[in-house]
Length: 361
Image 1 (cartoon, rainbow, N blue to C red):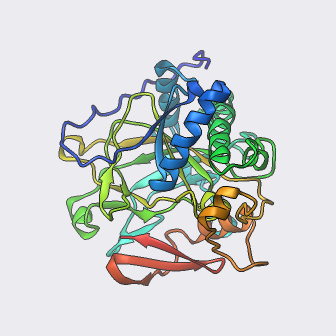
Image 2 (cartoon, one colour):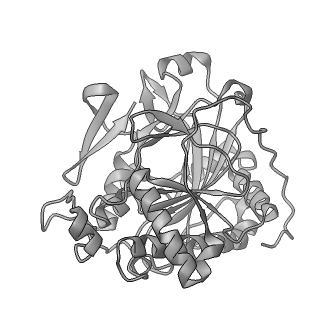
């Protein structure tokens, strides 16, 4: 990745020294996916991880630590080097459009007890020319485009092949519906969480973002040092995600759960206040959120012999299955803006496209 355009270097917080209850996640070494034997081995590992937990790490993904550091430098630009006035100019219209392109500014989502979020993110479609961007980001668009392509072809596609093999489907089954140049909303997200007041922490029980599932197929999170991400483990306990230098954290979303007939889990995760030795820092994140092409119907791959043996969980009645576009528009416009129905155990619910979507508060 070129570093010709000079920008400030972003310095994150040091890793926590607190003794946290970490989730034990499998580590997928993508360098082994270059051979048929390596792919066969990794496919079993990825299948089991995605089925049992829904999260795993990826290492040896093709970026050096220096390139990783550069992308975090770029990620800070839309927050630290864009005025509030200019941010409003590029604010996304999630409620109206069902698309996250542009800024999601702070205080947009309701968390609990009248407290709204203190995070903002900037979303860039993999086609970086789809809309105009803040002035300070424009010289960096070639690097962001390169980063997007790397995520798509060097990380996403190898993972999709492993997951297809895990279902005993042809290797390119999922790759074929995740075209880089197709119509869709797969995007790079830069996200920044800001510290909150003690009163806000008390009112929300230290939850920064409610427990939820992602609505796409795959989420690629570039690991960063501030501990705040937790997953709901199969035993019902919230466990922390450990930071690994230059590693990626991969999870499945709703669309992958639908396509796999419930075999690959869209795991519930949340963001909470960091441990005491990391409080007071901002938390910068880098993501690649993945969806199929917009026109793909989210039907399970019933031709999979694995699913035929395991059983298929259908979330929609025949004929009512939404396309990826319908599902992501419904989830995007509703998130954090609808009145949720209280259920048992602190769970809140809403119905989107006929499916009950749960939020864990």
